[in-house]
Image: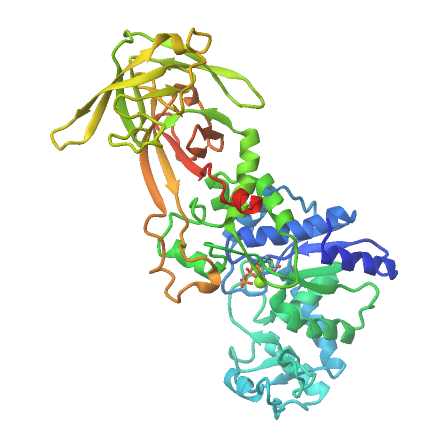
Length: 549
Ligand code: ATP
Ligand code: MG
C-alpha cells in the first residue's frame, strides 16, 4: 500500500509519534446504505490498519437522531463483512459517548472556551459574516462561567424549547476560517434517538463530536474526505483545548472522495430513488450501493481491486466506471464457468438430423478445464442477432446459403428462411455437415464464425435482466437539478431467454459467462420453477482498450 496517507503515517512513526500502534476507524452515519464511494473509505481505513499491523474500528456516527435507523446499522455491517473486512470486537456507537461529550462540553465551559448563546439560528447565521467580512460577536458571548454552566445544565434538563439556545465554542469571530467563528457545538432537539431513546434532549454537532469520538477510541489517524479540510483547525483546536497530548491524539487527514461516471453517490439522491420507486429497492442491481452491486454480481475481490487501483489522492477527480467493470470482468473471467444461453431465441430446424439426442462435450472453463455434456437435437435455438438476411460481406455469422459453426457441435448451412405473414423471420432450415464435429473428417475446415445455441427440447426458460446505467450523463457533477427526469428509461430490459439444462440446480449468487454475451449471476428471485439471471457486465472491455491505446 503506497499512498500519501501511508506516507504520513510513516512520517509520524519516524517522528516518534503513536508508539502504541496505528489505529483507524470507518465512521458511517447510519442514515443510508453503503455505496461504492464508501467502499473506497472502507478499503483505505481497514487497509491502512492491516498494512501497519494496527486496528480499525467500526463506529456508527449516530449523533443526529432525526435521520438514522437500525435498518442501516444492520446493512452497513453486512456490507463491510461482505467486502472482506473485520472490526473484531470494536463496533462502537458515537451515541454511547453522549455522556462523555457532555462532560467535555462542561470542561470547555469551565476553561472559558464555550458559552450558551440565545441568538436564533437565523441571527447566528447573520452574525457569522462572510468570506470577505469578519463576523460579529454575540451579545451573550461574555456570560460568566457560572452562568454558562447553569444554563447548559438546564438545557440538558429540558427547561428550554428546541432551538432557543445553543452551546458555542468561544474562538474567534474574525477568523478567516468561518468554521472557527464560534461554531455551535450543542443544540436542543427533542427527538427520539434509535440508540439512546429519549435520554437526551441536547445533541452534539458533528464537528464537536467527531474529534472526541476519535480521541476516546484512541484513533491515531482520522481519515476523511476533502470537504472536511476547512474543519481540521477546529478538530485540532478542540483536542488542544481539552489538553490531549499532541504525540498521541488523533490527527485528521483528508483524501479525495470517489466520484464515478454515470453513477450517483449522494446518499440523499439514492434514498430518493428508493423512496419514489424509481428502482426496486436499495439492492436493485442498478444501484451503486454495495448490496445493489452484490445482487448485480459484482464481487468483493473486484471492488477491493478497484479501490486499490484508483489510489488515494489529494484532489478530486472522476473515475471512469469502465475501470470498475474491467476489474469485475477480470475476476469473473477466472472464476465463472461458461455456459450457453440464447437471449432472443430464433428457431433452427436441422433437417438432416434425426429426432433423438446426441450429448456433446463442452468445456467449462478455458483455463481450469472441466467439462459437461450439452444435448444436441434436431431443433435448436440461436440468437436472432446471429442471423441476418441481407448480410453485409463482413457478417460472419449465419446468412441465407451461408455456413457457421455451432459451438462444441457441427458446421451448419442455412438453406431456407421461413417467414410469417408479417414478413418476419420465424424459423431457419439448415443442414449439418456431419463430419465437421470435433474429431471428424472435416473438423478442421475453416469457418469464420462460431455461434452459441441451445437445444429446443432441453433448454430451460430463464428470465434475464439486462442493465444499463441509471444516468446517461457522465459525471455526478454534471447532474441536472431534476436528475429524476434525466434517468435512463432503458436501464432495465427483461428478456425471456433459454439456457442449457446444466444450470438447472444452480444457486443465487453463482456466476456464469454466457458464451459471447457476458457475465451473469443467478438472482435471488430464482425459484425451483423459474431461473432469473442478472447481467453483471458484457464482454466488451472499454477500459482495457483505453489502457492499450
Ligand atoms: P453524509 O452526507 O450523510 O455524511 P456520507 O456519504 O459522507 O454522507 P457517511 O456515512 O458520513 O456518509 O460516510 C462514512 C465514511 O465514508 C466517511 O468517512 C466518508 O468520508 C466516506 N465516504 C462517503 N462517501 C465517499 C466517497 N464518495 N468516496 C470516498 N469516501 C466516502
Ligand atoms: Mg459524512
